[in-house]
Length: 111
Image (cartoon, rainbow, N blue to C red; front, side):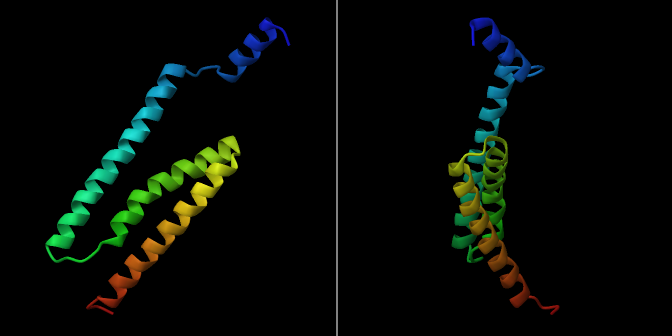
């Protein structure tokens, strides 16, 4: 391939995509996850010290963002690393969600 063919191929792949905008969206996504984790940690610690126990549903929500990001990356990029991370997050989210729902059902006054 010569220089012109490479440039043409790159233009076709990146048509209607602003590279700077893509980078900004990637940074925004990372920042959102960090803020989400920080707030969850504050809520988690406060709830424990207030005697409210552990809210596993909160952590399931937090980790579901990372789970989704890694599944999308795997689907788009087909990297085994993203698949492994996505599976690990899926297991964590499933266990935490299951435990949270179980705790709600056991402590329910309606059931």
